[in-house]
Length: 253
Image 1 (cartoon, helix red, strand yellow):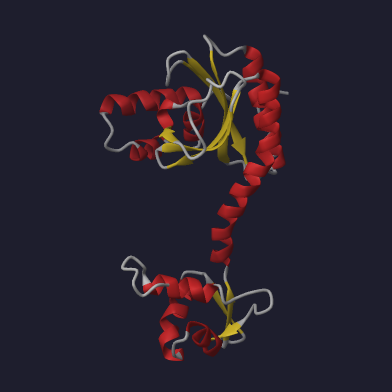
Image 2 (cartoon, rainbow, N blue to C red):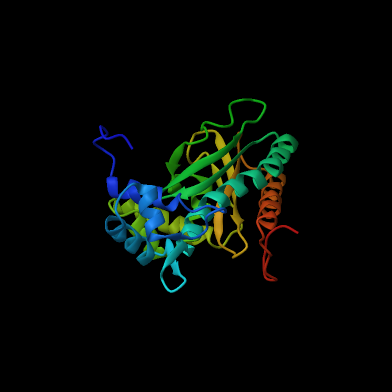
């Protein structure tokens, strides 16, 4: 940490540095060892250790004389590892879909009231994808975003859209009610005139929707074959993420 950086939070940097002191070679650390790592006194490191224990990032062992990383570290790292796994699992099936149908393929996740695009595979016409990786678009106005909102309850969606015009919120709720009844969401020029999209959910092993994929093309309507194949692709990716379809699932065979 630079002493000249006015935006750094010393206590946070101290806590992060402390967590990095643990390694496969040194899975357990005493208060004295941690103080030495941070270059401060044992009494000064006490509050940092106490806070990390309270939040679950450290776990006292051996009658509290030593510490090791706690379960909260796993929860934080899981989000990073899961997102990397998702991208690696989804890339090839989505590429195969793009190549067979020549529709642009995308993968996105919910980011507040927006959908964040993590994969973009352009079709051969170069005109069927108006977004780039890292783009954020309003969830209620995109096919992928509407798919991702089906994991929310109505009160959650209303809170998410708090501050939006009442008419827009009610329109979003009406669309959500219909979207929850269907395995896919189709947009025919709803976001951009002449641009059609169809999206389907990606499930993880717990059955939660963790992402969505979509197909987009400049055309008049979404053919049944494209909808069928995007659903099949979504199911393939979900299976690779550990999902098992329930018996009552109504998606593609």
